[in-house]
Amino acid sequence: MLLRIALRNRTSKLTAIIAAGALALAPITPVSAEKEKGPSTLRDTESEALLREYTRPVLRAAGLEKQNIQMVIINDSTFNAFVADGRRIFVNYGALMQSETPNQIIGVLAHETGHLAGGHLAKMHEQLAQAQTQMIIAMLLGAGALVAGSRGNSGNNGLANAGAAAIAGPQEMIRRNLISYVRAQEENADRAGVKFLTATGQSAKGMYETFKRFSNDSLFAAHGADPYLQSHPMPVERVAALEELARSSPYWDKKDDPALQMRHDMMRAKISAFMERQDTVYRRYPMSNDSLPARYAHAITTYLHGDLHSALVQIDGLLQVQPNNPYFHELRGQALLEGGRPAEAIAPLRKAVQLSNNAPLIEMLLGQALVATDNKALTDEAIAILRAAVARETEAPLGYTQLAMAYGRKGDLAQADLASAQAAFLRGDNKTARDLASRAKTRFAVGTPGWVKADDIVAAKPLPGQNSN
Ligand SMILES: [Zn+2]
Image 1 (cartoon, helix red, strand yellow):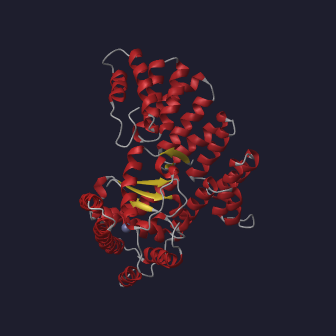
Image 2 (cartoon, rainbow, N blue to C red; image 1 turned 135 degrees about the horizontal axis):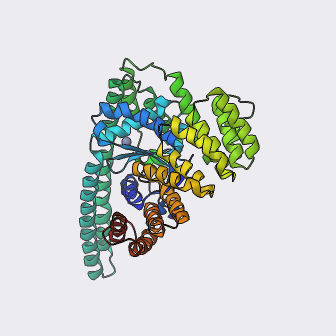
Image 3 (cartoon, rainbow, N blue to C red; image 1 turned 90 degrees about the horizontal axis):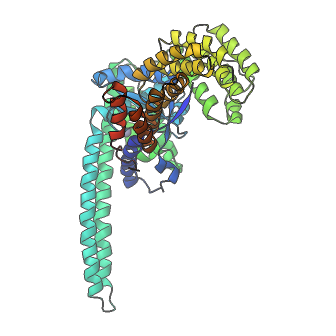
């Protein structure tokens, strides 16, 4: 399953702070209205599990294993990876698509872990706040000079020009200070990243390859380049220093494990099939390509474009190769569910839940199938499975949406309203969340657990960056 979920505004706000930092440094590009709304995230058990495996050893080497740092995939086809709040590493699906080997993306993630371990984010905020203060002072000084200039205006605008210079001069200085500060942080993160890779017996060649590519790109891509390049200036010296460091590791020539490479290729095939235009999918994975990743992409794009029968034949072919691949069973269930055959989706989804050790996103899909059968005998089981799923997966609204339907079917309107309110809250729709939670409160007895949960939502303060309406 690949779910697209709106990113909570809290995150986009933080992203905006980072972007502001990058904008202060990079050639200014207008922030589009689309970007201001904030990107959405992609949720997929298979991809997230792989990314967790990629980062786990690196985070351990960085001494961050206890911080429970999460990997978040952003619905964006450009290359980017960043840390924004000290507890999550964000990566665009474009960065996954552009990384041909596990080692390449692990290198980028190791670099981001270097930022996390170095506490760069908090330091950057300090620097930005300082720069902002300096900027305001510069503006005030400049404005003062301008006023003085206009007052003394007697046909000679020399003083007014002095005012303009007073604005431009310090701003340029502040900009340069920030640039050198960011460069120092980047080199620091490079060194830390290589250290973590070496400590975990991995090569930094992939990191070098990726950064080298950006360094080459930056020579002719003046603007419109990937956001990663904007926030990660790649001067030749930096890449050269990274190469020297990376080559000095005993693991420089170490190759990716073929089994891991296969899982990486499967993830990219899945993302391509779900996210890219069908002609792009077939260009990447021509029909003549009968590798497992190509067949995975073909099966997904076939089901997405409406040919359920052919898709099921293809998925069964995949299952013949890997009968215990939970994601093939998940795909079979999802195709049947979305093809309007929920009763048949239940068995493959049960199998997928079992093989994935109860992955909550797959449980939500199973819950959805159970609810969609319209069979009242399955409602209680759906509720039990969905409750277990939302307890462990706290950010996906789907579980609560399905819970609301299941409770509605049972006529439990209090729980249905509460679950709908929780789903709205997770979508960032605070107004709907508050309205539904208020109604839920009138249906619960005062002080019961449901009433308390509803009351929490009613009382919840809008997250920073969210409108209070
Ligand atoms: Zn960086």
